Length: 71
Image (spheres, one colour):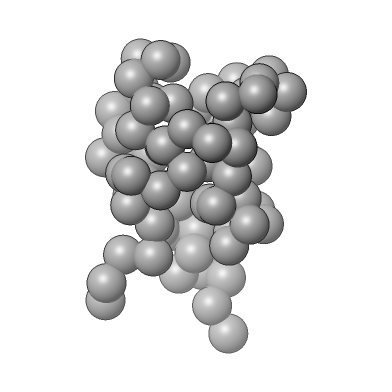
């Protein structure tokens, strides 16, 4: 299966295509992530680097969540 979410995708786009992404993003980046103006326009890779997280781990969890929510 091709990954639905990738490291260059913006956080805003991820939140659009995966409504439950907020659960994962808040765990990795903190609940303040959604109030940050960068959360709509910056990539998941940028967010991971700013918050000292492994981007591959964040992307993997988001893709697992996408798989669980498929019909």
